[in-house]
Image (cartoon, rainbow, N blue to C red; front, side):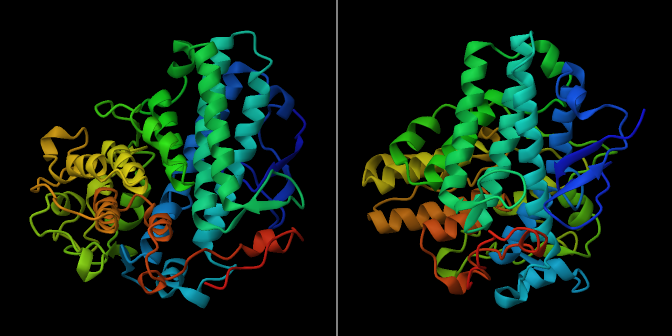
Length: 427
């Protein structure tokens, strides 16, 4: 069939781009016209699977870049080999990170690619006769769109308001709001028409879509300071049902593939402190330390990057508990805030779906400020290498001396092709 010219956000995989712009005309090597791809149920399922591949596959994935950028900017990680230029720039921080940084450009590109494809999937699903199949496509697409919007909002001061040429930008809080709106749309679709087994059969196993949507909503609600809503939402996701990105011997865990297996890119900065300052360092008896780190090899990375096929959680049960602790604490309900915090502090590994447990005595007698400090500390340990610490540092007002940058500069691939690109942040 004649090759189709299609307009798509900066892509990866089979799409070969002709210039470094955020929106360009691409030549598709597929024999399926774009209009057909977004109207055929099977083709849409395949594109939906592509969202997960873009988010999780390899060193160029959103998952690798999110975890590594965050880890290096917050001292969770250090660079082993300075020849890894993009990673080393992030470790140096400040002005050493500019629009040429490959990890930042990668996260920007994959995030916008996911948003573009997700929007097309949602629009195409609206015309399907099988509404239960359509709700699956909508929910799955909106799940990845919410993740992508959340990633952009965690690392940049302002985010694009749409896809296309010369798009406008909005404050990053609007990015979280757009993510929540996508989640609400997905949940409404599922409520109206529960996802069909036919759709779930066509996507990779592992992600519990409904629990994951509620978990992401709780995450972004607390990020935007909507504490009563976050408190209620964080109680919904299951504490026992796992929701994960699965990997195989042909689609490897990207952190393991790049860092753990090579011992030549990044490493845990300090197995005893996890990069926390002296006043907040973990108790040496904390059983999460040997869960996340190991002295067996140079990278010291274990946890959810311990092996090539180790699944990566979409959310951890402890994250939901700590969201509730924070929501209570910020509303000055210290009794309930402390009670939720201690569910994480005292949890035994055997009582956690993933084996993440501190197994420590309960914390007692904290003021509001002390409770918030302890919640921040426990988030840094419980959610180690999850990619959220930089966002937490801003929310808990940690000093700039503890981070290498506050926000990322905008990639040159955006600035050079969009006159609306905002000025880079000073730090």
